[in-house]
Amino acid sequence: MSGETAAQAAAFGALSDETRVSILRELYTVVRAERGRETAVSYSDLQRAVGAEDSGRFNYHLEQLVGRFVERTDEGYELREAGRAVARLLHRGTLTGGAEFEPRPIETTCRLCGGPLRVAYDDQHLVVTCENCSGVFGDGGAGGLHAAMDVPPSAVEARDAAALLAVAVRRFEHRAAMSGGGTCPECCGRVRTELQVCAAHDPAPETWDYEPRPTEPCAACGRVVPVVAVTTCESCDRWRFGPPVVAAADDQTVRRLLAERLPAGGWERFAATRWLPTGLRRSEDGWLVELPSPDGDGTVAVDDTLSVVEESAD
Image (cartoon, rainbow, N blue to C red; front, side, top):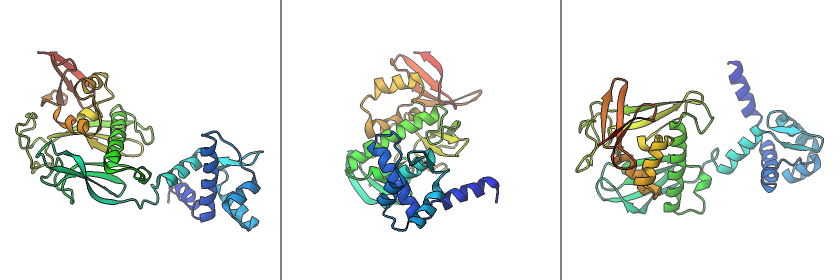
């Protein structure tokens, strides 16, 4: 076992007791009550809040957290950033999960076949499927898959399917644009970007503006669309893929294009971004995604860096 792995195992081991988790929760309750301002909690108040009757046992568990997750001060105890991060994960439900629901209809239709769309929540992902066709990414098990967006269980509470979808789309768009701009929204590491093109796509990848749009995925890549933008963090290895226009939204020209062509936002805009490009073409450095210019008088081209590298007038 490497030194880093041993340190990570020790960190998780320090959380392997209900009393220690309760200590973090109670200290975080104070942080929330003080709207983020750190306020130290005395030893006696913390013991009372946790409900620990045995002082010796309580002190032992508290000491296992001090230094890594909890800071001891002259006024008492408060959370370190690592402790706040763990407490936030607990409140989001990320570590315990539990929130799931079967497919539910939403008041919007599939842009491929006109059939009804449904959303389901499974394994902390909101999944959008079509009942009548294979969707954009083929059969997702519960129907034709259009999207799968990670959303913490805490977001599911007190929201209906439509509201949850709006939250999921907005979250995905913000994170995709930040990743496309070169910074990981999870860890702030550097991000590699690329346009992943199916060279064997049927119809040919150079022909994007399909009329009518296909309702069956390509046999080679399993997608209806010939290209997706892929971003991968060099630090935490978090990767995501999606419409190139969404991932390139950190670029000023692409932001203007979205504002002009698709200003409404929400699922309808997200779904429409897949059909906003007018084509694909090869350059000396790789593939380019062609988009209409924001003013409608020409085209712009986005490359692997998810930035506009060419502008041309009609």
